[in-house]
Amino acid sequence: MRGGGRLTGVGAPTDGGDAPLPGRRGPGRLAILAVVILAVAATAVILLRTGGGGDGSPKAGAKTSADPARFDLPALIGAGHVRLDDFAGKPLVLNFFASWCTACRGELPGFLHVQAGLGGAVAFAGVNSLETGDGPAFAREEHIASWPLARDVGGTQASGLHDALGGQGLPITAFYDASGKLLKVHLGAISEDGLRELLRQLDRVG
Image 1 (cartoon, rainbow, N blue to C red):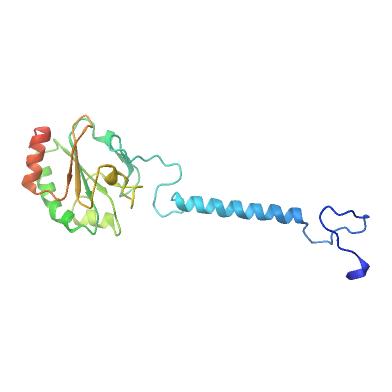
Image 2 (image 1 turned 180 degrees about the horizontal axis):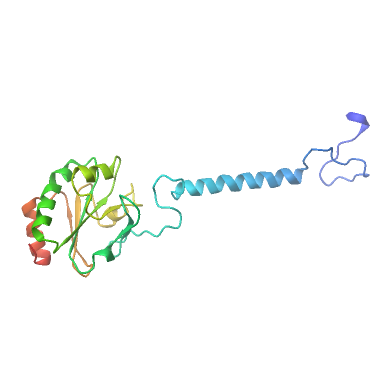
């Protein structure tokens, strides 16, 4: 021991001659530092889980909904949201796709032909779901980038609305009437003629 001094534990009686050495932190300061470090680490974990790390996922507190009756999803390209309420007054064809989905590529030209023939009487929109690649690039390649396009959130794999509609793989297509009521969910690809027939049956259009 230096200088004949003695060590004292927390709470041990002292005679006033054992003041802490200059520059050394007492146990209380170390405890406070430990608490601060743990709080910073916990905050970092929360930000990563909620998408606050700048990876393009919804920020903490962002309002999204994968409820089929009132969905509200982030836009796939650019800022903003895609909401069911946006299509009030028109029937809506809501198609789900992903860049890896070959059946999606196969059906989309037919969707575009049907849309062109309807002259705006029916709204068409897309939801990028179960994505593992580049959804925006796929949309541009398949010429649906002019549609309102949303990015699915939540669920088993960024697939909350897809899952809520009973989706099993891709593609799936949901049909809403002009009041926003869900009429039908079609699982699997739809041919051009099949889409026209579904629209005639559900909305008496086409």
